[in-house]
Amino acid sequence: MTSEVLVIDVHAHIYAEQLRQHFPDLKIHAAHDHSEIPDDISKVDVLFAFGISINDPLMQRLSDLKWIQSLATGIDHFLRCPSLKPEVLITSGRGIHGAPMRETTVLLMLSLSQNTQQRSADRRDHFWQRRLWSLLCDKTAVLVGIGVAGTAIGQLLKAFGMKVVGVSREPRQIEGFDKITPRERLLEAAAEADYLINILPGSPENHGIFGRAVFEAMKPSAFFINVGRGETVDEQALLSALQSGRIAGAGLDVFATEPLPKESPFWDMPNVAMNPHIGGFFIEYEDYIMPLVIENMGHFLAGRRSEMRNIVAR
Image (cartoon, rainbow, N blue to C red; front, side, top):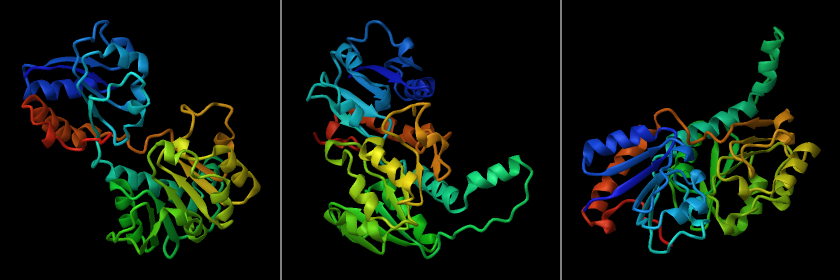
């Protein structure tokens, strides 16, 4: 079986080079952005991309598409395209994000607990001030969304000496977690948290789940961490909680609107640590995802679709 592949990514050439080494008969289009996508992609049957780079006009042009390999764990952007045919196979990048997401989460937590914004300002001003900071040890972390990333985050936080509570639709015993709470008891779990950590994917049932009721349930000394999806949070409710002191602060890697508008209040809030959605955007990314890409490509070309990894049920 031969295929025509479209790779859309800032590092598309890396994927193309590796694919050609393993599958020399492939016809590959490597597009670093939309401007490099060929005019005629009607014969492309395989797409490798992050969902954030996909829109429905592009999907309409992919009339012969048979398989999408998401380069991320999330596949919600693909599913939002009305022109996506139901028979198109989708596989995700699930399984590689445990390490980067746990490091991003801890970065945000330590930025808040050690007040690194104030420390940076002191350094800028050449002002020596030994300010007190707060330990993560003996605090309670409540993680909402216990997949690969959530499990990795929880196990690392346990090593910090934290009490780790998971919130899941499917409560079960997980190594490193002190307990798992059913999702319908989210408000109870939020009230227990010193750090409430959102790792939920974007989906209709998760839209706005972190709203006013959740922030009102939290302790005034607690922090909210979002490394999931921006649309899972009612940002007006979060802003209100931060501005009023209802919660102590927030560490945010994702936002409902990205790039974050320049007029957003989040930019200038002293109790907010921020990233520009880089939790899963690390230098070694291709080294982590490429074995999955190569394995799935081999199965696809051999007609062994049932053996492909991370098939998305839909």
